Length: 415
Image (cartoon, rainbow, N blue to C red):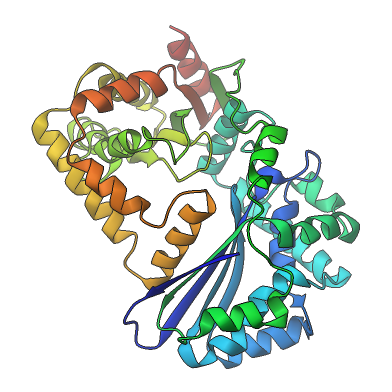
């Protein structure tokens, strides 16, 4: 386990973020959601503490302790005051080295997970996104939501969770502690019985996993159109591609494009879809950090009457970034936006710790952001256009609406 300290003047508040390699992308084929179920159940008893004892320790300190599942990893988060660090940090170690996984707590978390999936499925946007993801990634590691599927979660039991829990101790881990913390915190962690057995990284394991699951493989989609029919007057449109890894040198070009398209009221989507034509309730770009095949999606919410025009405008915006270079003035503004976006996302100690743990967890260096900012000045419009040509051609469309709108859009999409 690698430990990075990020000392800041935070009035005695400390944030610890532990990123554990491999999240829902490593769910077995018929156990989608098993990492989510494990991460939530680890909080319900570990080491010498049962569910009530952990809750009492954390709540009596006015602290927070969570474990979240992402596609690329698990994230354990602790926030507390400096003086409680040595009381609470062992909980993180016990969650990895000795989760109790009581059957009644597993069943409780299964019930909560299934309810969360059902709530999620009520969202028209989520249904459109799930359809897009399934169309693009098929049954690959990124083909399902970290929550999993109801059908799979219902069948998972303790015997399924045990080997996954046992594997955590051997996975690559990066712990980042930001804010105000005890000066000898690293020595304390390395000497704590709660962290016993958590050694240094197994450097070859990540490469072996990647080969086994073919994460780097570009899936060949049979279709470029997905539709989910609902009884609704709302229309959700998602137009996008699976692109490249976050650690790719070309990733910054796509980041700048996402700012150009969807960040702020001066963005292309806002100016075209909201100001000029007034066809959408909401529009933007979804381009998260992913270790592999990052989605790049333009999304819009509109009405039945404006659906065809909205799709045409989305396609025009998409074609523009592929065929036309951004002007020097626009490029300067986009670079300013990117710097602002980065600064805004790293305002709190929790945000800083999480971001650093995340980028270290996917194999980047702690000064990755500084390197990107240094590169930013020399980036040209031609480089951005070339990247768009290379990675963004032939996008795929997902729509969630009523049958009549789907019929019209399907016809328009094929022409």
